[in-house]
Amino acid sequence: MRIAIDARLLTGAYTGDRTYWRGLLSALTRFLNPENDRLLLFSTLPIPSNTLPESPLFEYIVTPTRSERLWSLFQFPKLASAHQCDLAHTQYTVSPMFKIPVVTTVHDISFIVNPRWFPIKDRLLLRLTVPFSCRKACRVLTVSESSREDILSWLRLRPEKVIATPNGLTEGFYPIPKAEAQAFVAKHYGIQPPFVLAVGVLQPRKNLLTAIRAVHLAREQVPELQLVLTGKSGWGMKTIQRARHNLGDTHWLIETGYVPDEHLVWLYNACEIFLYPSFYEGFGLPPLEAMACGCAVIASNGGALPEVVGGGGLLIPPDEPGMWKEAILTFLQNPDYANRFRKSAPEQAKKFRWETAAERTLEAYRACLELSTTCG
Image (cartoon, rainbow, N blue to C red; front, side, top):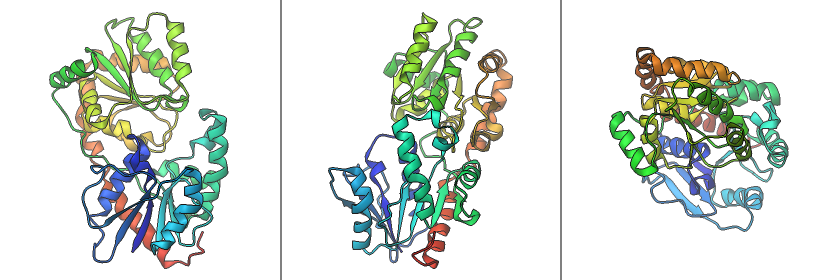
């Protein structure tokens, strides 16, 4: 079995889509046979050498391009055929030019669930390409049962075509003694305790305004409390800037920008509480990582977050800053209550394994290969 992978996301910064490829491809090497199978990783830039484990299963094919969209539309299907691939695997978009079966992973369809969470250009592009891609694909993988139900409901695909393959916990997230973690964060970021942490791209869907308002309210009783926002800039930055302006003194609101995973584990371990107030998630990797570190997690009940967090954290509605304030104060003022969640969090995180995702993905590959190339 020769599988063509659109591996361009492996050449960029750490994002959820990149984490997905890293976790899945690494796990697939434990189930495939180098004598019969190959994972051909096609990209337009070289993939850094430490991205994936060394394996005879991987073949790296780099083909530079002036247009990523044209590469996706024309060049990738042509390359897959030229390298005699049996099947291709993409994320989100599937070119109509493919002559072999294609599996696509659609992490969520939040752009359909609530278009206001996206800039008009992104919204129109996703509406134009993703529904077509799901119909064209032989199988559609998604990362939670919640997301699967949304895809079935909104796109009206056959139930057997859409498969939930939940993400796994990436290595590198584990408990560290709090004093040691706080010393690391103070040294590298100049942030002193106590602080609560929120992680995610700074965009409206992440609902970071609720975190800001909740901490602002909590500071009336705990004036030394700070909020640290970690994540790369998104199109919601103006909202956060307006919040700063309206609140006046916001020395307690700290933005680190994007940080690599090897630093993120220290931030998780140094914080008092991890906040994840997102309106909607197809999965939610940050709360999974935070739970693996033994954080006290407060997350919203939006989208797939109840599946991921389970009993490893406290779930509350995303649009109630007052409830978030009360939850923060309860955790801070009642350590025994918070410690119940800290204790259960790592066990909840262990339920999510990339090996499980790999097994389900292989089942999808084999199902496609058993069907004709016109499936979908």
